Image (cartoon, rainbow, N blue to C red; front, top):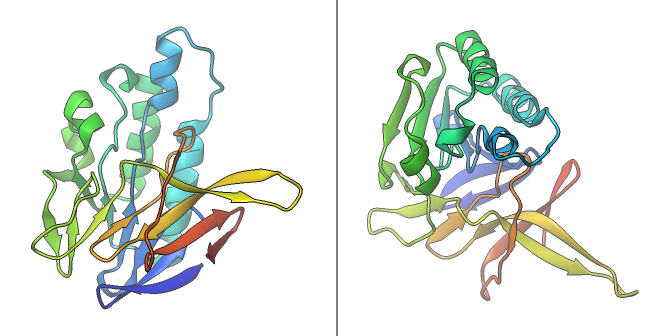
Length: 214
């Protein structure tokens, strides 16, 4: 775990690719993409099982370890309408039932617009981008907000590190600019995009079980 101060608030950056906001007892998660592997399998593309179990194990591990009272999903909780398959949904429903008192907030992303909101009995509070949890404004696509410091996902940020022998490594990262912070994709099997931070931006890479400031 690595700590940083963003908009005057202490955030703890987790190797599970989520951020913990202790003052609000809130776990911040971007791009969960529930049902992505199932969507591909329904399209005839053979992919291994287990991504939902992996995502839920990491989510539950964070919630249990930190004592979270709220999980705020920064968009793209669901991947697609094709990913709404019984096996995937049943697994999440079982986890939700075990955490019935946990406040789940979803800031809708572009995938959620197509996939729809989670089932009503999962008791999510679903809102459009721009939800204010002062000093933060929760969005999906990175863009500055007038009402506070924007926290976003969407682009699955990563950096490419190069070694002296010509080798390179792409690692997911947390990226905090002057007015917008972007979290890495939480979901397994979601890919990443290399970003180009500006001077003064803070970048933290996720390497195995560590979060390291660059």
